[in-house]
Length: 588
Image (cartoon, rainbow, N blue to C red; front, side):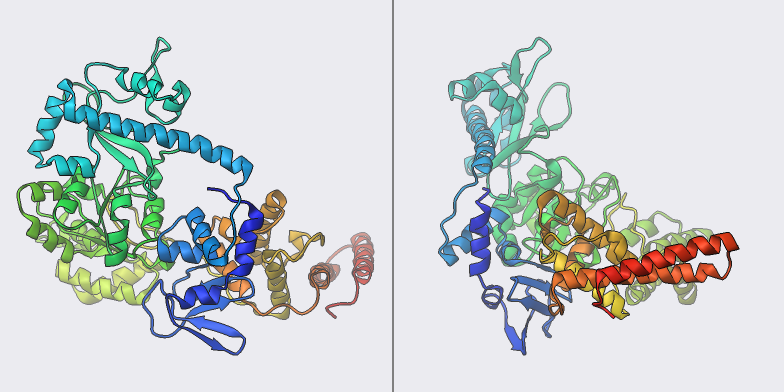
C-alpha cells in the first residue's frame, strides 16, 4: 500500500525515535545526545546513537540504522507499508491512499486474488479429481494426511485438460490478461490461452505477508522438468521469495533461528517434526535478497541440505555471493547423514537425528574447509600440501586477523600439517587479497570487501562533510554547487550519488541509496553536530577551497613552464583570484 506522502511526513514529525527505541531496549541521555543498547546485536555498552530531531538511529557496532519506519520494520518483521500503518495508529494520523499507487495496488490485488482462487481450485482438484489419484498416493507415501494438505494448501493441476483452470477462473470473473500476468496461464502456439501447469502436485508460494504469489509444482509422470515454478511476474520473483516464510516467521523471530532447506517437502517435514522454522528457496540458488529477507527476523541461519555433493553444493551456487561483515549473520551448516535430506529423515521417523544435526551445526567456513580437506589425499605429502594451500587461500581472504589465526589453527587440526607453515601460508594468502570474497560454488561466509570512510583529517575535509550533511538533510534548496568542488575523492563520489538522486526525486532519501556502505556512512553523517553558518555560506566556503586548490596547482606549474605558457598560467591565476573574491570572504 502506498500512502500519501504528506501523511507519511506527519507521522515522521509526530513520532519520537527515542520513544520507539526505548520500547525495546534501554536508552540513556548524555548531554544533547541519546545512546542505546543496540537491539540488533549482542552488546553490553551502548553503541547506538539516536538523532531525535530527524528521527534517525545508527549503531556504530553493527552498522544497523535508518529512520523510524526502518526501525519498526526491523524490530517487528514488517514491510514499509505495515510499518507506516502501525506508526499512523500510534500517532493518530489518518492515512490517505495515493491515487496512482491505489491503481497499482488494485492491479496487484487482482493478480493475488486470481492466484488465491487457483490455490483453492488446485486443492479441490487434489481432493476430488479422478485424475489426481497418483498425486494422492504420492502424498500419502510422504506421510501427508488431510491436515497437512490443508495446512500447506497442497493441490493438483489437472492432467486431463490444458484449460480447466482457465475456464474456472474465467467463470470467477478474471480476464485472460490477469491469468497470464499472474503466471497462471500462457498463450499456446495457436493463440489460445491455456493453463501454465499440467499434471503436477502443487505447492502454493506466499510472500512474507501471506499473499499468494505463485506455485512450485512437482511432476509425477511423463516428460518435463521434475519441478516447475511460476514464471517471473509482478508478484513472483524467485530471488526475493522463500517458501514457508509466511508460516515460519513468528517462530523464527521467537527462536532467533531460521533453517534453510532445499525443497518444499523438506519445509513441510520440519514443521511436522515440531520445528516450524524452515524455509526454502523457490527453485533458485540462495542469494543476498534471501538473506536480507531472513535478517528481518533473525541473525542465526542454519543450512540443512542433503549431505551428498549435489545437496551440499546447492547451499549457495552460481555467481559469487557477498555477505557484508556488518550484517552480523551467523551462517551455519547442519552436517546431515550421507544421502539423506530432512524429508527422508522425518518420513523414516528419525526426527531426533535431524534435530541433533541442526543443534550441532557448524560455521559455514568450517564446513567449507572440511569439504576442501576431504578432496585431497592427506596421507601423501603432496596431497597435504595442496590441502593446506587451498585452505589458506580461503582463510587468507578473511579481513579479520584474529579470525585468520583461529582458522589457521583449525587447518592444522584438519590436515596435521606444521602449524608455523600453515600460519605463514594463510598470511601470505592474506597479503595477496585479504578483502576478496570467497568463491561460493560451495558454501562460504567470507565477507565481501567493505568500504570505509575515514573521519575528516583537515578543516577542509570537515567542511566538505558538512556540505554532505546539508545535502542529506535536504537543506540546500536551490543553492548551486558542483561535485568538482569537493576535493576528497570518496566524499565526491557520495556527493555525485546524492546529486543524481536529487535530480530525479527533488530530495535525498538515505534508504533509497543502494550501496550499503554509503548508506551506513550517510547515517553517521546525519548524527554530526549541525554545521555553523547557513547552507549558502557552507557552499561558498567549499567553492573557495576548490579554487584555492586550483591556484596552488597552477603555482606549482609556474616553476617549470616556458615564457609563453607562464603568461597563460598567470592569466588563469588572475581569473581564479577574481572568481574567489566574487564568491565572498567566508572561510578565510
